[in-house]
Image 1 (cartoon, helix red, strand yellow):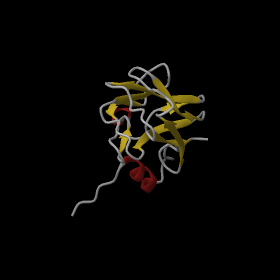
Image 2 (cartoon, rainbow, N blue to C red):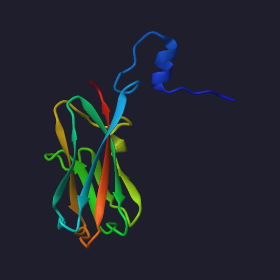
Image 3 (cartoon, rainbow, N blue to C red):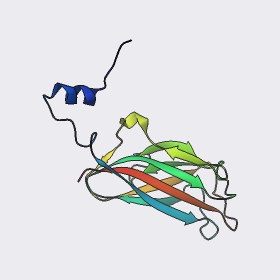
Length: 148
C-alpha cells in the first residue's frame, strides 16, 4: 500500500525548512455572535457585522446556526470585510430551523484569507428577508487562526 504526504508533513520530515507558522501550530480561535431577529428586521441587501478579526489573523469559516424554530433557508449570505462583499465566503444559503450551515471559501486555499489589520466580518443578506417572529435568532461562530 502506498503512503502519501502533504506539503507540510514532507517539509517537517525532511528537516530542511520551517513550515509556514500560519498553517502548522497556530492557535485557532472563535468569535461568537448572536442576532435577535425579532427585534432586528433584517431585509435583503442589509448587512450584519458578525465578528471582528484581530490584526494578523486568518479567516477560516463561519458556522451559522438557526436557533429554535428560526427558518432562514430562503435567504442566502456572503461574508466579506465591508469593502469586498465576498472576500471570505461566496453566497451560501442560510440554515433551516435547528440546522447549521458553514460559510467558507475553499477557492482561497485551505487556510483562508489573511488580514493584517483589525477587520470586521460582514454578512450581506440576499435572496430573501430574514424571518423576524418572536424567538427567531441566528448564532454565528466565526473561526480564525491567530497568527500573533
